[in-house]
Image (cartoon, rainbow, N blue to C red; front, side, top):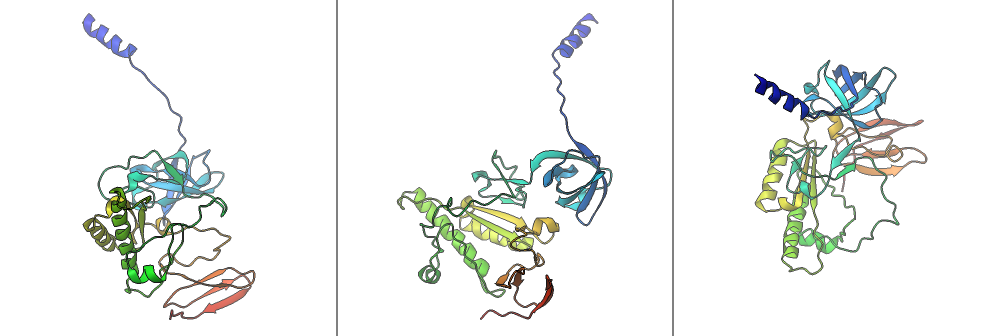
Length: 301
């Protein structure tokens, strides 16, 4: 009996305890991808909020008695009475070479079943872009692998290039062929066949597409052995609206069309009005300050 007591006392003496302070609240109501939380104090604007079942939210509406947050995940996993806690971090995503060869969602969480992404580097989603003076000049070309495009259209690293066309005309095919071409050049650079070549890594972003289309693109890239140099970010149509919405500066685009429209064509700027966007095969009417504009069907020719 004494030996048992001595063993218990020894374990109690060697026990180490630690206390942590966390800001915790309770979900009052949820619906339409929005959750209202009570008791969540000391929360920051645009702070990531952790819900149960691995769902995250973004605090946007800060009131005296409650906090309104949008859900960046499946809203069906969040119910009334669930415990919510703050993370102390603004909206950020993991970055680094650990994401190469992986399929992730808009928050950088893996979707391919290959385990967690091991990286210590995170990058804020909302950040002021560096000025033109600080940016490196465009000096190195990018070869798409398509002779007609490479011969007529010069493309350089750091340059934005827009692919415009009607549906089912091969826009995605051009992008995937370019990714495969970069993978081949990266392999040649690793073997020393290309002198002073810097590897170029590609990110394939699928917003509002079917999971079958994303799986088809993944199969093509894996067949051509291009995935070790590529990251796929998937936000299918089944995801919540905040995950499929591309945020932009309110000064540049005060009026934003629905997220289901994927190919936008800038028209022009009328005086001090807003930036109006027109899209193919659609007609819409919108109010731009005191001026009502009607943009008819636009056809690219």
